[in-house]
Amino acid sequence: MTRTPTVYVVDDDPGALRSLCWLIQQADLPVRAFPSGREFLESYDRAEPGCLVLDVRMPEMSGLDVQEILAEDGIDLPIIFITAHGDVPSCAQAFKAGALEFLEKPLDGDVFLDHVRKALARGTERKRQGLTAALAARMARLTPSEKEVLDMLISGKSLKTIATLSGVTVQTIWKHRLSIHKKMEVDNDIELVRLVAEWTTARRP
Image (tube, rainbow, N blue to C red; front, side):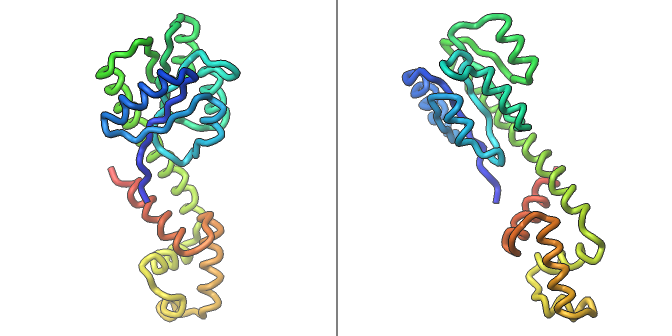
């Protein structure tokens, strides 16, 4: 199932947070708001594509702190920093760590949304590439026999039919299926079909 890219906005100023979310919603883009970096980090699912609009100066945890934690966790989420108090050291640190943009308030709505759309596109492409690499690694674990069984499983064939076509016992196919589930890191055939569908979609140019 393809996930919809979302704009995550983190700002400790309630008024600014509402304004940013309203602007993004007017552009028909999905948005989620967080009043602190910690709440965002506790809620974010790394599997979700999107981008992050992040205030630089916030109490308890700054935007730069959030960026650092994401990097330490291996989460490659495109970040647009916003600030009312821009300074060269913060800007340099943000870009050095991979930020896409560093914008000063008050924001120009059209310019901001243009950056958001570019960030969403970048985030979607990064997720696609990451998914392709991860699934390729799982697929590489399968033996030739398991790959043949996988093809028949996702086409909807029963274990008995697969066994007949393969010239082996149902017990043998059952063992192959268990091994496939383990190597592909899924719990059942439904998850397996979904994963292979995502793999096929991700490989398309």
